[in-house]
Image (cartoon, rainbow, N blue to C red; front, top):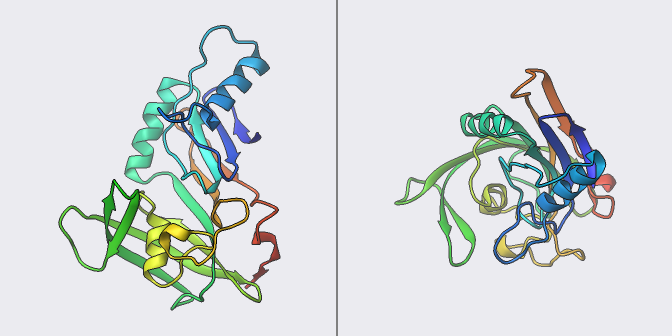
Length: 223
């Protein structure tokens, strides 16, 4: 487990591809449980360890995840995520060059629960939620392009869905139109950084997660 930041109120870690952030009814093995065990062992805590989950990453995605070690921090983080005070930056590898070097994407997303998939529309649609993100082309290789994505709303599969909508499905993402899976079963989407004001101490927090070494992130020529 790679810890990027930790104090009495928060712990921020670099999630690996394939890890489940939070325990569910189907799978009890999760990053949440690993962190609880780590805290219990490192600090010699008896009894249950408190750990709150203010946000999640999809299982095939890697990168920064914030956990709250106190109920006060969790309540405040929940409010900060809801109001957009936590700034999240992602890296995405795509096969096709995007239509513009940088752009603000706005779509209306409808989630299909049975398919666990989200669909993007250009105009308001019944049951749709507005979704916006900003992307910028920051690198390239002989075969792929590297996009930096600033997530402005937090919708189900938002980045995956919106990039697919403009003809740029993420490498390895079969669900959203990429031709082949990645060898590790993940997709080439990495939560690179989060920046926010600490909910308790009020200091500025910037946590950056190194991208997976076995993917192509380190082979991109930055523009």
